[in-house]
Image (cartoon, rainbow, N blue to C red):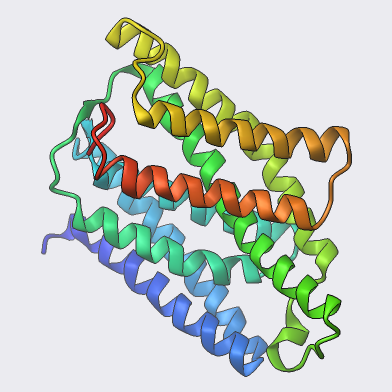
Length: 270
């Protein structure tokens, strides 16, 4: 192992330790251990940033491979978690982010030698990817908040006593604010990413759409995202329905990344 690989292993080690500390802190209701988990996650993000910078600077990602796709995606996911933890005073966002950042980072490292399928070509394509990553990253955090919201709401509805660590979970209103913030940031970014993708396809492949399944799943996600954004902004949706839509968007994004890109026949295959 040479020194350029050190940030990747350090990043994964810190995220793994943050995941273990998060679980121990939440189940043990230890504020000190939960604080340690947040610090470990922040340290992992710093190492993650260095890993990403070194990879780009070394020319390791001259084309879009599975490793390239997952490394910046996991970075944006961790960034979204840090922003939510800071802005919403909700450290539990990092407890959700740490295992996902570890999983996606480990996949990125495992696929680091996979040949790229699409050559990186110009700022339009880079903007397409970056905007998509932001849209998916913030919705991943919203999906975590949505899962907690539905769990908490179900317990309240059935008058289940909130004992143990569940007493420390954020209030429903705080979880809903995460969804609102993620939607406000994520929908414009995801929309920009899809638009740039179609423009790049027109320039590179001669048509805006080729009928590729990846294009259709991206449009389906965009429509659901637009529904969530419109209903929240125009009709004042709160609570259960936005939480469910956040989970659907994130699940569809995972399907797009891990099934469409790797299993189905597509021009975007890795």
